[in-house]
Image (cartoon, rainbow, N blue to C red; front, top):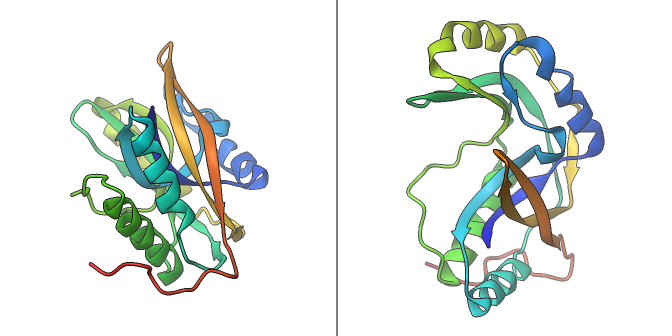
Length: 188
């Protein structure tokens, strides 16, 4: 299983983002069903025991619900393909949740990621040779703002690849639990 932890977006927010898809031709637009905010990529997990350790670690998360807003467009540049993105407004609550997830998964045996957390939602992919067009798209959508979405749970997804397109299947949801203490269970 190829796993990652993410915030699943509301239907209303998915629809709002989907309206941006047709504004640049010849882009491999991501289906709106796949829009999410990745909090932690886990990778391949083949052992049942490791899957159970991950589930147990995520069930121990302590956090409170918070609002999440999207603001502005961006371009994540890579060598051959670039990604059109929408930025997520940074907040202490989002950073704390992501840090908490990282800590719990590390304790469950997941390798530490060296990549810094950049909250964004991928909308589409295009050739890096089209950066000038992509830059115009970013400029045209840089004033994008969403209404706040209340975050009440995180989701463990499995990524399935088929015919050039990924499908993200929710495996488990971990809801805010008012009975859990708001202090991390472990210290590094």
